[in-house]
Image 1 (cartoon, rainbow, N blue to C red):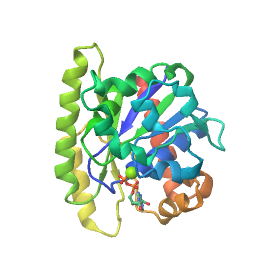
Image 2 (cartoon, protein in one colour):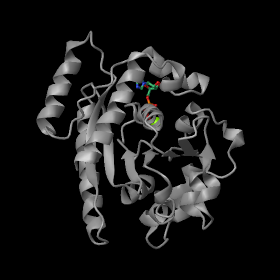
Image 3 (tube, helix red, strand yellow):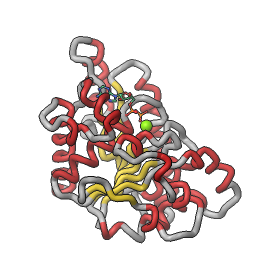
Image 4 (cartoon, rainbow, N blue to C red):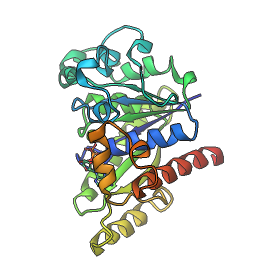
Length: 259
Ligand SMILES: Nc1ncnc2c1ncn2[C@@H]1O[C@H](COP(=O)(O)OP(=O)(O)O)[C@@H](O)[C@H]1O
Ligand SMILES: [Mg+2]
């Protein structure tokens, strides 16, 4: 049964999309059948994995808003273990589309449950907001990865994100479902800047058992890979960024075996 993990933080630019595509590729390298769902209207994950907007006919918008078959929205990538449900700029209107619908935070859950058997991991790339999309993402998810950039303002966003998770946890209890924090992932560490290490200490103090051992350093390969429509694993397998995301994948696989 696939494990559904949301990659979420309402702050933009913290590495959600970079984590979704590269962790996804790293899990696929471990021969885990992995599905990415791009839930951000900016479609960075879609484009980063090499799918042009104009080739997208059915997207995550259709999955959220329409009654159709979710299988039709799944696109294969070059890696046979890695699939994606791409995004569309129609997602910008999703609040309006779902307005007034009953159980509107359970739209994604109802669809994704039909395909959970076919995957080992389903990763959701969330938008930088706390609206209806994140509610849908957290409802279907078993756990959340919160990427936190090693800088001062990361901090406040982390608290808000945890409050949101607590709120959804309560709502899910009513339908006998749970939501856990998979881990806080420290990203974009500049190892020449001592301040980043202070943020790491603070986060570890707050989440002593929930901070991933793997830390993602700043790396130009991670920035460059999506310009070629490739994951860093494909683009520069031996680079530091690739190695770190492969380590993160192993950490997530091990956590699952232990729990
Ligand atoms: N570890 C990293 N090193 C260098 N640049 C990074 C790293 N992680 C992300 N970036 C860059 O930072 C920007 C924001 O990252 P992104 O993953 O799109 O964040 P989000 O999805 O949270 O908005 C992008 O330009 C991305 O290439
Ligand atoms: Mg993003």
